[in-house]
Length: 248
Length: 305
Figure 1 (spheres, chains in turn yellow, green):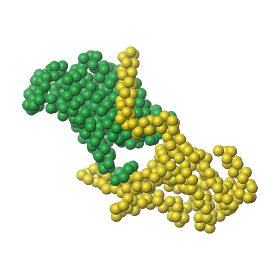
Figure 2 (cartoon, rainbow over the protein chains, first blue to last red; figure 1 turned 135 degrees about the vertical axis):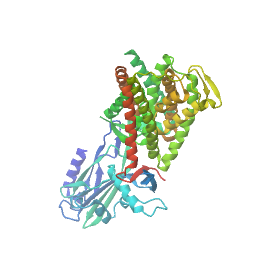
Figure 3 (cartoon, chains in turn brown, green; figure 1 turned 120 degrees about the horizontal axis):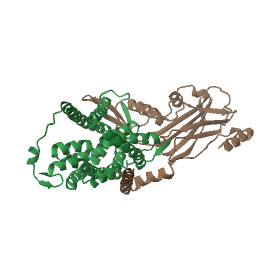
Figure 4 (tube, chains in turn yellow, purple; figure 1 turned 60 degrees about the vertical axis):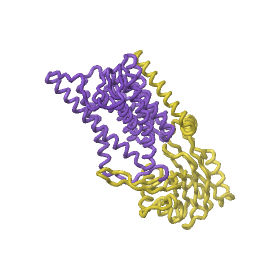
């Protein structure tokens, strides 16, 4: 990874490549294994225009988002003294995870305001409800974003995109341990004079690996056999524990 | 040290799980209860999704009950005939429970159903246990040993389908044990408990079984019911996390040994009061959470309406 950044640093030194908008990421695949506590990714690239100055209205915005996951937002109401779910709104295509970073000029401003201005991420700022939605959809949309932020799955403020020189930029993302499994998209926007002048999108995958993946696949592909194995494992463990206890 | 649970799909500290297993294990050993009624709420409290907590706890209880059954069986403390009748009801009940679980989950009411079941049953059992053990303490202090009647004839003896249970020296209708088994199976599937805390009093007070047979026979039924629940939850909901179950188990194995050794040295009656207080405390905590206004009225659930 470091070598890549170094290579990019060298390449920016050559003026010929300065007008190209190039983005890459340190890893294309994040593997979740037994000891997974989260993962760090570095997204880096070169801006086409000179961005190094902290001039307002110029900069880079990075969005990492994925996988689309049908989700229901439920609201509790008080019935007979007990708070129980009553009514809900389904969001069939809202991304399960959203992380946003921006360079200095934008990072000081409220996230929602900047994204709305450049028409980025309309589907996660206010996800589209399933057909026949309730009257108070806006309230449920706001609740969706709020609960996601509380779970650490949506950014509530910008991460920082740093510039190293006039063109080269880089940002560091930490995927939390509860990162959802699936396909992600990395979207990078270059903004100049308050207009998006360049945009790219590329793919990223988060998947389970090793023993974790095998156990999960087994549980979902052969649910009955998995149940039997689970029982057998518990029977053996219990019998063993009993036998050891009788010895001592 | 964090470990990623493949079915629950989140990372949890290994030592937290081992510690919870050990802590609940100590209480199990001390009081001779399975501990499911404490473990399942604890798992939900640390963020395990309720469906995974319930199903994985059932899987863990398979292990805890098998060593218990073997120990009682060696001492001749299992009435297999009674166990089979209880079990027939239990299998039907757990099938019904898993189906109900799936239905309620789709309606978004499963968390509420789990909490309500806990509040109602822990409340009843805790109150009965508290009253009974306090009465026993008082009796002991007064020094009056009151002897109960050997045989009381109640409405239960009027039910049809009478069967002879030689080992328990009972001639009673099979309907009652079947219904008790059914209820316990239902609760095992929805609450992730073995149900001993309901079955044991029911066997003593409703069926009039001799106490020497109660523990072994209830464990026999529990073993098969939690096995059925594990299988059905795995097949219907894919919510059994074996890694989670095995980690809890590893902790509880040690805890149970410590607990049972402690229990032999401590006065029984006073400790039964403590257990009753613990059961009531869990009940009140859950009730409190149900009736106080939540911080956020909204919550997220995977899936569609």
